Length: 539
Image (cartoon, rainbow, N blue to C red; front, side, top):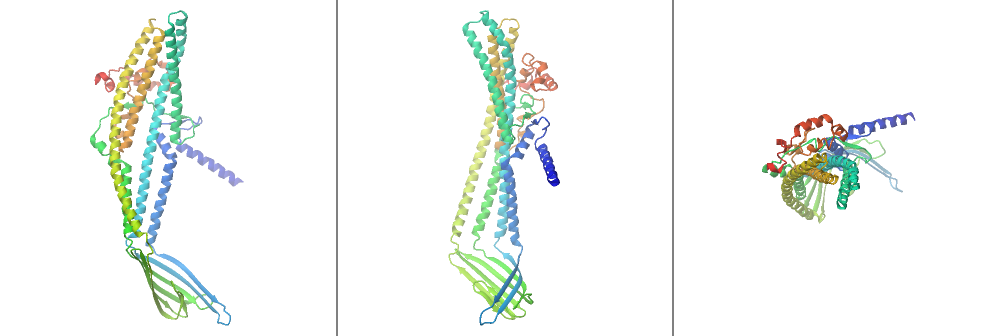
């Protein structure tokens, strides 16, 4: 009982340590706080497919080890016993114990080719692991980015929705005093419902994106998740600058191409094995033991040697062997394949045997032909793969350029709607703007916020897909950088607007006050060079 208690305690400690290693920053509140890099590590660690591929790698190592074993002599111990108690005949008894060795001398290089094929299959498994890992990492990055985007949209829409609810009373007073027509009433009501709808959609989208991220990370859905980065504050967007050699080098960088080359080499090896069917295999054998014409123990020494050949001509196979043995005393038994046991006396004894199996292997020609077809298909598939990879790389480049132009236009549209909103807000203080006009400006601003958020996310995602398509790391492209508090989007203008986000509530919105103030000093003027990428007037 004490042993079971100790075992249970050790198991619990091990599980807790494993969870601590896999899920960083999981405290008493059970909140999992991760950045993008940590999310990738968790997703890759928890991937069932990657773990399966990793386990299969050991199988190919074992196959190579098995093939290496063929170069070593095969050792065996044999016992042969015979006892006859026949009526009206002399009783006989015979016992024989031998140590046997059999060594491969020549096989036409087949075993070395089998070892090479096993190593190539292991390399294929490694490339499969890399390909799967890159796909999983891309899915995690996109899911992570989607959560950041929806989190940003929800934060802004929620703030606008709360302010809209506060403005409803003003709109009702306007209706009571008759300052608004029935059409204006309906229009205001429609805009309020539309803002409410934006809030509901943003809230639902965030929850769904969090579920998708947890699914990609293979995490239980009940674990609360918090992301350390902010799409607005931590992503520095940079203009795309391509070099043709970078796109052209995609063929060399992609693990799919490496896998294709390895597959072709493996098929060449398998083809060579089948085409070498005609090469003979030579084995050298020997034995040493003792026998006796009576009951155990044995005492008469016996030893011998053998040379065996296995050949194939077309579909006909042949097995031949030459055997030499020495019986030092007494009477022994030679076990001749195909002829049964033969008694031999003291001294030297030898026998030769050869068996010709006519049309024994009719499949040899089919195997050779199938090997040629498989190799030809692999070469053609490689050529098709090269074209596909290049096409995907160039298409990804076009998507990045398109996403950049969309981002520039979205920033310009946001800038216009933001300036309009500020003008309406300033006029509202003087009482010259109706609540319905405030709602209209608020709604247009929210639509532009949603559009620019999607544009930022779309541009970053297109760069991620470009990295996947070309096999070049995101950091080498330098089309965006993740730096804490260094985000350069024009959308930060709204974040630091005191009417939209009061300073005292910045921290409540999940933004550190110190970082926010530093960020405001950097981007408070939209005419700074940091925005020359965005505004259409600077084209």
